[in-house]
Length: 284
Image 1 (tube, rainbow, N blue to C red):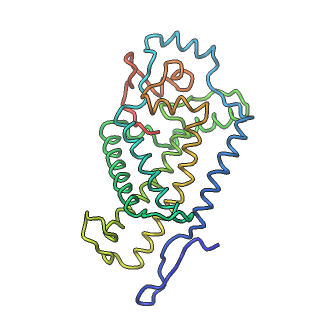
Image 2: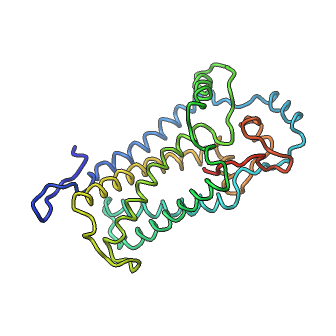
Image 3: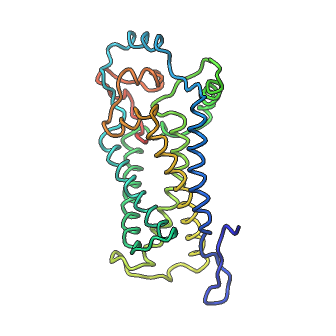
């Protein structure tokens, strides 16, 4: 199977033109296969959280905390749902025509792309200057947590740090979605002058043919990657044991009990008003 498509430029040179759309079907299949495999695995997983007795003791220790703990502020929630809407429009308008559904998709696609790029730009500024930028990223500091989580999943009752504000899976997913989202957005903005939008003067020749080919390939790879990532995100959002996290992206808060069951207070300190004692980057 050829993963990339090639074509001849007007000057007879072989240049990249796009990715093979077989990758779309591969990404779709991989996403579906993942949630089937994970759902089957979860039937036998230990799926550990704090025991009730330990959580009861923490509730007595942190009885000054309110019943509702803020997890996501209004700005973060608005960003999330605007980005999600733009992402779904982009994926449907990009891949439904490939699946044989014909409609005038170009205008909807570039408009959703503008919304996505604007929302990402807002989030970068918001997370950098108003929140704790590094709380959502992964690094060497997370190795003890990863080791403890893996051992717990295999049924070992081992000590180890619980999650901070964001579970390790959230942080790993965030890293993947950042690269895919930025790849799709940056290359999409580069392609805006190539079509008639009314925003800029149309100029399909401001990049060389070879550069256009690389742009299309990066855009296509990011797009097919987002198919699998979005499937995984929706799957986890609707799982019963993850529904408390999804509700927090709608309502903005979790309960004190959920906070103490799933998080390490020392890694996500919360004050008596139910707000973070320090800034934290909001990301689903």
